[in-house]
Amino acid sequence: MSLCITIAAKVVMVPITAFSLSWVHSVEKIEWREDWVVTPAGLELKLARVKGSGAGMEPGEDAVFKDGWWQWSPTVPPLPSIRLAASGLTPSGWELCHARGCMTLGATPGDESVISACEAPGERNRGGGEDTASP
View 1 (cartoon, rainbow, N blue to C red):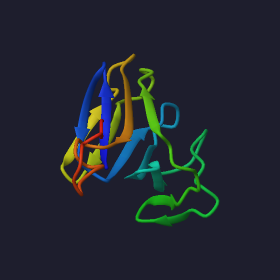
View 2: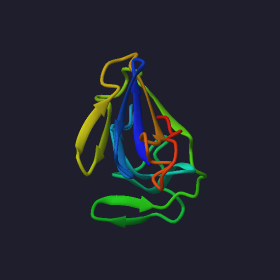
View 3: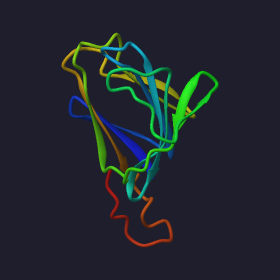
View 4: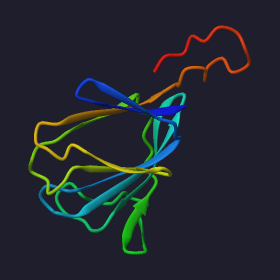
């Protein structure tokens, strides 16, 4: 599996299976970070962390305070995609990081990005036969 990032009708495929997504809350100005994995079922949220609490920033019920973050493992089903729309009310965009580096999404108000699980050509039929995979 890979991660596909769609920005302004352009799709970038990143051959990774794990990434983090972080941002600063528009009202509380507190950092939020989530760790995701890319699976055939979709994008699965494994760990959420927040530097503090406030309006819309409450840690999960099973959260523990560790290394300056409230951390917990949310129980949500896999998502087919995540749509990020820049409102202009946050001090920055979303930071998407993975083993190969980081990129900022939605830094400009009105920018929209969609991240989703996808298959690179050849991933589905690695054992031979016709390649029917598409990103």
